[in-house]
Image (cartoon, rainbow, N blue to C red; front, side, top):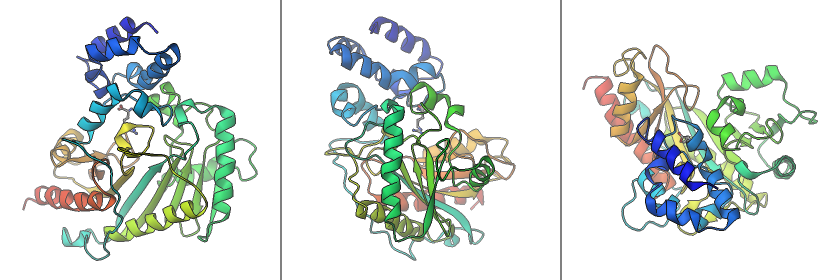
Length: 360
Ligand code: ARG
């Protein structure tokens, strides 16, 4: 690997938009990279590929296998700490004790009676490569292994595969319907971050979705993480969606799955933004005033950011808001907080956002 070229590229990108990957490519990292074995040098280059190829990267790295977080900790550790706002030592702890009846959205705004609430956890399974470095055979084997787990669930549901020729192959029409309902992920080849990092390789092989009969629980197979375990509930009590998600997670574990975990960082994920709990919890809210009817997305994003929240469009990451300023709002930190803290932060952040939206 020609690390001088890599350094030049980061220097070129930095003034356009400084990703964390560029920010933490310091002279020390530059020296250290050159002292690695050939194989590790290539691996580290793979880790940086998303950031090197995309000027709009905010983060810009993806782990290619669980061991990368230790092998390249000289580079990734400070990046993780900055993203999750960590000072001092933090060892990830888990706490799923999220009460029902405590985080009631309609107490923030009576209009939030029936809201689309979503919580997901990213998971990867111990013993497998992370999606950027899986080959087609491994992706297919992983999918087949998960289907065996789904078959043991006591929640009624169906696995739909996007693998061509699969016995439960998802038709294009059905896939479109699932996407419109926000159940299914987008065609991964339309996302440059996912293609350049290798996450989207072999698309659509080994990709699919398990969907519960009542359509409140779903599991994505083969997206940015091997698994995304999700619950979507329409209502106004955040605790309900958390409990639903936890039930689904328990089903997975009962099926004999051991998730990849790191002694310090907790849940291991492809993108360092999801380490720790792997949990992203959001609601779809409307902010016509702050976003000036959706024409000033930036205002909403920046205000959300000042409350440690992230505002996305309604079609997921990098999607646009509509004329009602409909946005998906979630706390950005997932490491150094517990699953319960994520719910609490979402609630507390929404209180502040709605105070401004409603001019209180
Ligand atoms: N790699 C992209 C970037 O750096 C996305 C980062 C966070 N999002 C994610 N889906 N992991 O901007």
